Picture 1: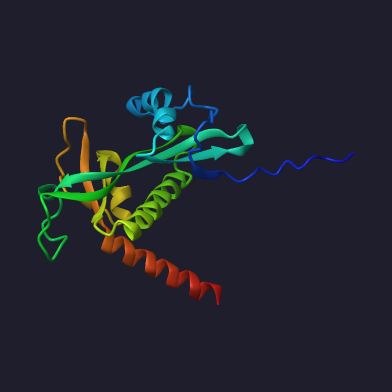
Picture 2 (picture 1 turned 60 degrees about the vertical axis):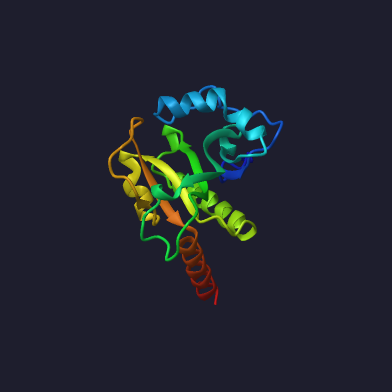
Length: 194
């Protein structure tokens, strides 16, 4: 008797497709009520907009259910919010940055490296944006205290170590450092391909 191919299919990370209805939105659970409510109420609406870029992680083994996402958009932040030593020149009062507004993976797939993959997609998008809008100075995000170390491993700097009223800490990664990391990664990829 012939057996069907039971090997699991690889997960997919793709840009949110306008007009799509993703499975798993209504029962999305990453363990954070605010993010869960956002996914259920606003993810589709924000994915339809032109002012945000959303990447979704899909599990093709479960009817392409949404297993995670990251939301990115252009943002202006005050120069006083950025690390004082980040730039060797003065900045305008409002500094253009790319903001990672939310990133989450369902509890079922946490600790499997998908957060790192989604962050990588967001940072690649930030590099693409900065190559067109060369006044973009960095990437910012508000991290919950329990994930600050994760972002620090990815070269983000903790700007404010006292959590705000929402329990998050402001973090920053300069575009210059991100470009240098990307160049180093590409060089390593070329060397390993030889």
